[in-house]
Each structure stands twice: as C-alpha cells, then as structure tokens.
Length: 318
Image 1 (cartoon, rainbow, N blue to C red):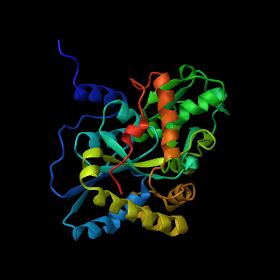
Image 2: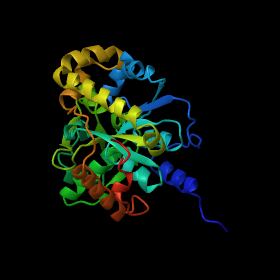
Image 3: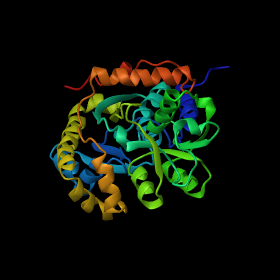
Image 4: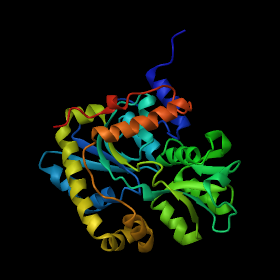
C-alpha cells in the first residue's frame, strides 16, 4: 500500500493546527499579486485601503488582490495551496507549516512586539498568576504565536503543557468563550487583546515580554518569491514606509482606521502603542530564535518532526 502523499500529510497536520483545506495546485502565472492578511496587520490594512501597492505595481503590469484570514495557520494554508502569495503571521505558524511540508520562505520580519501578545483572565477571576492556571482551561489558536506564548509561560513558571486544558479556538470563538466563561483564560494578540481589556475589563496575567521574542513575519510562497522577487521586495519596501508613519502617528492612525476596521479608536491606539513597526529582512539571529521555538515544539510532539528553519530562508532575494 503506498504511503501518504505530501498533500495528505500537510492537510492532516494543517487541520490539527486550525487550517481548512481550500483546494490545491500551483498558482497561475497571471500577474496578480495575491496578498493574505489578518485584521491585526494594520500596516497592510492601511496599504490596502490606500491602494499603495496597487499603484506601485501597476506600472510593472501587476494587479493586486486581498483576502482576510482569522489567524496565521489559515493564512499560511492559503499560501501553500496556491491561493495567495504573501502574508503576515506570528512566530509559530511558519514552524507548523514548514513541519507539515509547506513550500514557504521567510521574506521579512516585524517587531519584536512582545507587548502585543498576552494571557488574559476575566476581571473578577481568582487566577492571579500563571501558576494558578494549573488544571484550568486556556483558549488560544493552535499553531499561533500565542500557542508559543502559552508553552513558554507555563515552562517559566514550573508547569508543563499537560498541566492545562487547551481549547484551540480562533480569535472570534476565543472571545465568545472568554466572554461566556467557557474558558478560564485566553491567550491572544492585538487588537483582540486591547478590545477585551477595554470592553470587558479583562486582566493581563502576563504579556509575552521576557518569554518570547514577539517577532512577526512576512511569509511568501517559495515559487512566487523565487520567480518574482522584485514584487515581494516592493511590497516589503512599502510596508517599511507605512511602518515609519504608523510608529510616529499612532493617534492619527487609530482615528483613520477605526471606521474601516469597525473598532473603537481607543482600542486601535492601545494596539499601535504596543507595536514596534519596523519591517526589515530576516537575519540569522531571528532565524536562530525561530529554531529554538521549532525544537521546543518537536520535543513536545506538537510538530511531527524536527525541522531546520534555515531551509525556509529566502536566499533568492537581492
């Protein structure tokens, strides 16, 4: 009997990490740059609303499409199946994706912004510290940056992954479970983090500071990045430009984006003030940090094998 194909293995692992199969096959060579994004990727939301990338690439014969995803694992699945070319994620999703066989590369990085990720409890909860989470139900998105935060926070406080009951939920479902009391704690990132602080008085028992680097990444489908490096480099350059503006004008940015994202300006301002907007190329120390995360996941059996993160380095770029 033949063994499982790469696609079968990827789909199985992907579903465990919260991915949904959306079809497969390589993308068509159609001069369309397909960007996947998340609500928390405010710099890309700005560029989308302003049409900046479209305008720059138009003279090169390219058009641009956008697709929003709830979290990094689903976003990376879209890259793997040829539905998107480029998008932003946290530190853990590319590790799960690479271990599952996704053909992706680290095109750029953001941050670090460890204050954007936190473990929260309801304002009237008896839980005061990470140690109090023993035996409790903790919600987070499987394969996300907050998955890594939970692991590191438990380890730093003398607990193991087996000491909590994980509830693998997307941000929207996590908010609902947190608000209803179906879970005891929630590990989440901004702007969802800021929203429950302000809406519900949620209490932070730890941010990621001192536990995980808090890096964000721009991931590209390897075939696209190798065939069209200038398109990817143009996108990264424009992200860098908008990052400088966002870093200097958090209040103005929050006011502009509030009606477009359907979030109060106060929520967005708190998010922006906790964010380090600083797009750059991925360097060797950052990949070494990723390797540490990958090794920890492999040791716990959360990914099916040990991986070499540098295999996903973008060597084709200038």
